[in-house]
Image 1 (cartoon, rainbow, N blue to C red):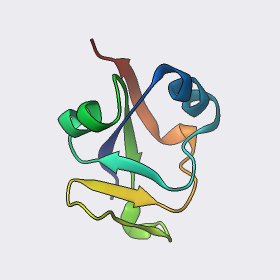
Image 2: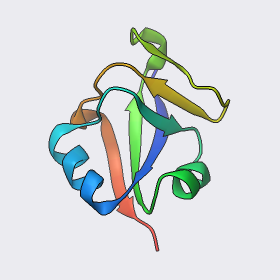
Image 3: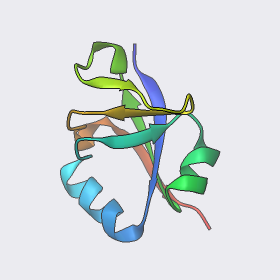
Image 4: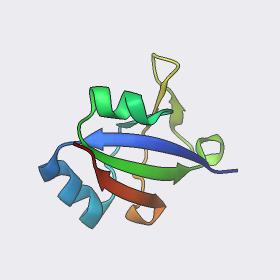
Length: 83
């Protein structure tokens, strides 16, 4: 089952993500507020099933996860810039 995670970043990286997807080792937050606080105003909602993705694991903090694999751009549910 897929779950929605959030990834915040800057404008330059957002353009790259929209074109290429997420790089290996990218962090995703469980909550929008965490992605805004630690990542940036450019927020992606991403549907990921970490349970079945080899190399994905909870990060050092319970509010985020990291994945050793690439996350394709097709996993993006939405993209929004917050002010």
